[in-house]
Image (cartoon, rainbow, N blue to C red; front, side):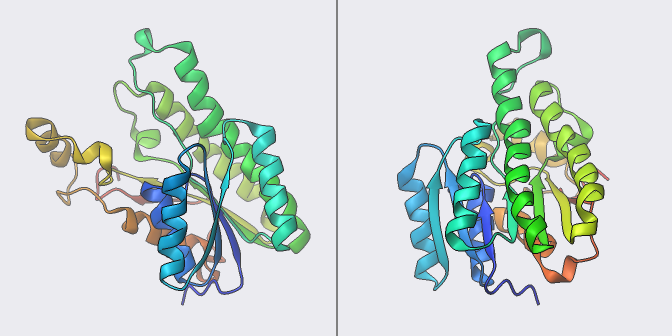
Length: 248
């Protein structure tokens, strides 16, 4: 099950966190994974090396998802060079928190550019290739915050909620071409950011989760793997919640 042998996958923001776990998981199932990054070449190289050390195939490509033209050009170039593109995991995102009355315009713009416009640009470039092949998988990384909201994250919530509408719309637009479009909505995930939360703040955070713990990046990656697989061929327009029961 979940065999991706011979398939080419692009994972945006794939050098760390959920993106890296996703890249490693897809590669472990046989996909040739192209992970993208913006500046930290060392992290990207480490992610590629980790995949190759386990016998997988991977490479890293640098571009800013917040630049739509750069995104489309880079994805088109990868597809042309490798001869195909079967999977896009649109994972790259930024969270620049702030209450509405304190939210800086530039912070809102950056979140819109990366989380929404960048995701659309990546999908547009990937779907062009997938249409010719009459098949493909697109998975957007949304968030539980986009479903339930969270004080101090109005910009982030707006962009992640928008991706759910994008998912449903693109699923309808390209189903006839054999392309499925889905989303994953993670809850609290054990990352560098959440690991630094301690004491009462961490206790309050975990109280909101019925399972009483944060998720591992690998658990989010497993959900992505399913949606990218042939086993999920009849699943489209769906938002798969991986949040420990935080939002039902």
